[in-house]
Amino acid sequence: MTMRVLVAGATTPLGGQLIGALLADPATELVLAVGAEPDPMPLGGQASARYRYRQVDLTRSRELHDLLFADARELGIEVIIHNALHRRARAEGARVHALNVECTRQLLTLAERHPSIQRFVFRSAGAVYRLDPRRSTLLVEDDPLDLSPSAPQKVRDRVEADLTVCTRMGMSRLEVVVLRCAEILAANVGSQLHDYLSSRVCFRPLGFDPMLNLLSLEDATRALVLAASGRTNGVFNVPGADVLPLSSAIRLWGRLEIPVPGPLLAPLYALRANALGMDFRYDLNHRRFHFSAVLDGRRARDQLGYEPQHRIAWPAA
Image (cartoon, rainbow, N blue to C red; front, side):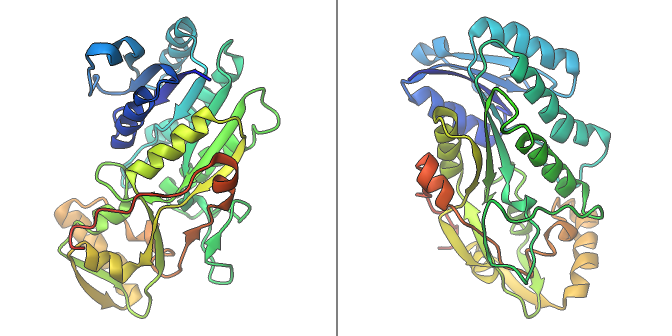
């Protein structure tokens, strides 16, 4: 079965890998890539005949409408993969919320009215779950989300966008898929752990060494392709192949680990952020630096055919 796919968030590292994987698949008739910057990967040869790029500000309603009902309609787009979320943790405010939440809501609403779009795939994150030491370390899709009103905006936006898409399931004519991905440990993808490991010295809470579940770009790409080409609806955890303690991640990245009392970590990393411009925020990571969290991927394995296959390329392994 062939498909014509719109990829929102095409200028991210994951977007670039995803476009390459889609174009490598003969079943992909056409990819309409959408990003806020100029085309990062102009193609030549046969691939260029199956590739279109549009520079669009997805927070502008008129541009979003024209994208779907001019470009996507003319090209007969059938599947949307929504990967366009704000990546910087320290960016906050109305414009960030507009991209993370309002854009998701409008894109889904317009897709439901579109004559050719049949399937909507949304890349969410495992970070939407509320970590609780009284619950199992293994998180399943029915576990509660972090609905705390005091949570940082990045967490609130993630949860609101996830719920916005989930609430359309069963009510929309579209086939809707939400992928709650483990953290992708790579540069420029919004990985808080990657930014944390960018320092030569990594401080962690004294007396705590939680288990982490980390996802490679290759496996995240494969999960999105499987979700786009499948016919199964629903919410799916997307775990990574790496499950290891925080201390091991620090060591495998070639960093010096220093345990310190927990109350000192927030002011310590606030000072580092001001001095060095780090994007890492300890308030976003407080719970997962104390409590283990591993995504249960059985539903994705059984219904999407996804299993993690690629481990992280650890620099000091």
